[in-house]
View 1 (cartoon, rainbow, N blue to C red):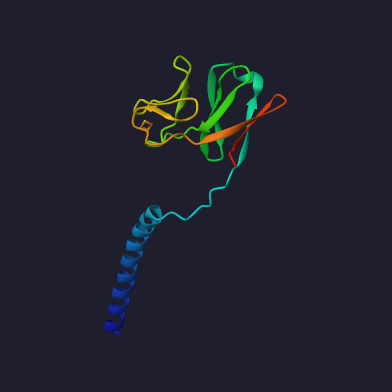
View 2 (cartoon, rainbow, N blue to C red):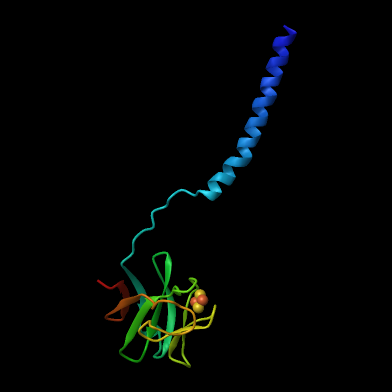
Length: 143
Ligand code: FES
């Protein structure tokens, strides 16, 4: 009878210890292996009003889960790009003084076609299409 109680106590202590180990390791395992979340595919987003952006300026808009850069080159010309630098994924911005797209992280420059002008970016920026619909601007992926 005493031996049965000892083995029961040992079993309870052992299973408690095992439960403690699992409770520490499981969150670490989940952190290192997050569940796959399907990223919603976005092909077109509203980008504001024509009057909101003066010529020779740019702004960042959301394109799904990623940033996009909308540039108003002049009164009638618009450009849009993925704002994710092709070097190490920093967000690029429009630089009014140089009429270029600039990545502040490592001083990378792109022209207004998304081509690399200088710095470490290895590839051009992905260019999007800009549609002017009345007073509304829409950015879409190119077909
Ligand atoms: S991340 Fe853009 S130049 Fe390095």
